[in-house]
Amino acid sequence: MAEIKINEQLKSPQPVEFEHVVNGRALGATKDGAVTKTFDPNSLVCLFRGYSLFFLNFKLNAPEDVKERFRKIVEEFIAWMNEKGHVETAPIPNLRSIDPRTSSLATQAGTILHKAVLHSERSRKVVEDMRNGEPLYMVSRSRAGKLWFIYHAGKEYDDFGPVSVPLGVSDIVKAGWLLDCDFVKCNGRWQISAVRSLLPI
Image (tube, rainbow, N blue to C red):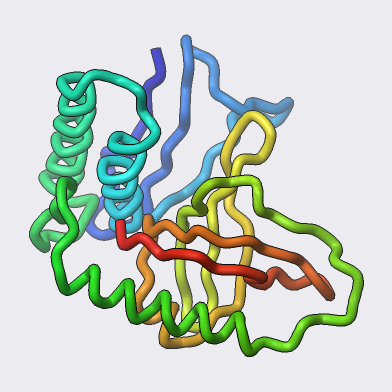
């Protein structure tokens, strides 16, 4: 059974180290020991929201009572992180619906991004790499004018980027949102070559 180890000594709001362990063995272990990554707990809450609103609804082929059980597990885990001080004390995000304001902001950001891609200059350089195999790409983090995305890397998931986007997009889009798009890499930089929709998870 999989478990997640969390450093109980951390105070709010600080990064938390998550080490994925299956049957007592760390996933991705190397000669130097287990591979770990540090996440901002508040961004994890956004990713859990994406898991609840998108993955459970559209990707998991299971009865509704099973999906509801998973939702409650996620909600209890977020409440636990809040209680321990790992996340900010702001109200826990709704994991079951998208509010109208967020939906409107997503429409605005999607329109800006779509126009930017349409009017961008196509690189004359050879395409070094491309990513278009995922039905939807989840945003893992954002900075001013840049986004990073999660993709399936062999047997596990990792993120790639940065991908340059207009400030009007990066100021709105949050970790956990989903983008239906294609990417190409030219001159060592990732760029969006086509965009179809943006889902505000």
